[in-house]
Length: 256
Ligand code: NAP
Image (cartoon, rainbow, N blue to C red):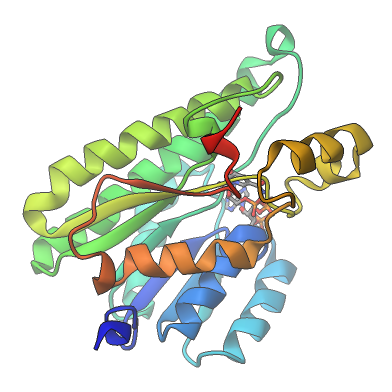
């Protein structure tokens, strides 16, 4: 049955930044497809609220507090969550931050902070996942969350754009290196999506108008728009797909 290819029954997943926004939308989608999901974030309260909502969909989900800026601690964090979930079949590197402002005034600290959370942490976490899956000879699926900024940019987001350009190439590199081990690596690239990250943009009348006009489907996306793409790429339905970006952007990249 074609529909069974999309099922994630008996699978486990880790979604970083799964306590709100796009990450939560994806975590809920994975749970609805049958997976037990671990989510992570820095904020205990957001974790608890998200876990309560996930628990209504699928039993056996967990939420863990971890700051991905602590890159030296990622290996121990990964091992703990993997042990708790009896192994992780799917890894979704979703957590991300941005700093907006004049590029000539961006501090080194801001630059390094964005690169650390958006690019270094997904790399290190993917290494942990791959080492485990290669050791177990189990194959697997990694999804990295990119952005329109994997392909294009706009003023004031230099560090973010550099980090997401890196994600685009990282998807290709990890897919190439780990294909022999049966680990597929793909990216999902959201367009403009209503979340905490974009709240200042939604509230900005001029920017909001630009997004509505610039996006062919004529609306902001919502986190639920991203879940089907992530479920698809994580599932057996995408068994011959690796190294790709799937843009969920209302047509933004198709036009100028
Ligand atoms: P969001 O609503 O701000 O959520 C960000 C998530 O990441 C939260 O769960 C947050 O949890 C977690 N997080 C942030 N910094 C972290 C850190 N240092 N350690 C651990 N967790 C951290 O953002 P979003 O809009 O859903 O964005 C999610 C992803 O989609 C990001 O990679 C973003 O770049 C990408 N994206 C978003 C859009 C959009 O329009 N919204 C467009 C393109 C791409 P805590 O606060 O609890 O740590």
